[in-house]
Amino acid sequence: MRLKLTLEYDGTEFHGWAAQPRLRTVEGVLHGALGSVFRTVDSLAVAGRTDAGVHALGNVVSVDAEGGPPVERAAEAINASLPDDVSVIAAAESASDFHARHSARARSYRYRIWRRPEPSPFEARRAWWYPRRVDEERLSAAAALLVGEHDFRAFTPTETQHDVFVRNVSGAEWHRRGEALEFEITADSFLRHMVRTLVGTMLELPPERIEPLLDGRMRAEAGSTAPAWGLYLERVDY
Image (cartoon, rainbow, N blue to C red; front, top):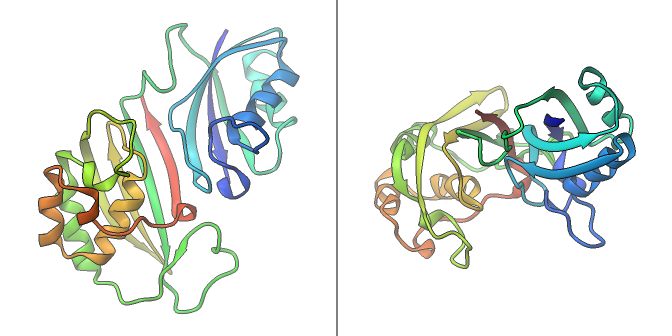
């Protein structure tokens, strides 16, 4: 059967999603757990290939698995073989043509900034401590510019495997939640480092300097790339 698994993980101790020789990755850990639960495992695919240090609240995997527990017990069985920093929070049987990445219609990310003047040991690996002055109205104005279809090549590394840089953003907003300032963005898909570079740029540049960047300007014209540990893949829509 083809399974659709929804994953939650703390990316702190992982070298990203993709399996790499001699490195601890989310894909490697998950594949090992699946192999201990099912007789055969094939066609493992993921909606979001998160980078090292990036977290997930709702990343999605599709996988063909046979010779294991029924689907209603799959999450429990897989979690018994997973480490504490990864969890399958939902498991369901999907159509045979479902593909976690190709079937996705939109993805949503959240970036958390810790705004308290003092750092928090509990937020050190889960938010970017940024005690400097921030103009929240300016941030909101900049986020509003992102909605729509734009060329985001200024917000991804110059050396890239992407050929198309146009993305359609359906929502982008900043929210104040207690001591945290959170940026949430939804788009059809994302370029590598796109969300983190948008965050760094919005903190450094005024909206009037960001707007021209959305017409495919060079990476050097945008701002810094925010640290990985503040980023969360929040959900995937199908």
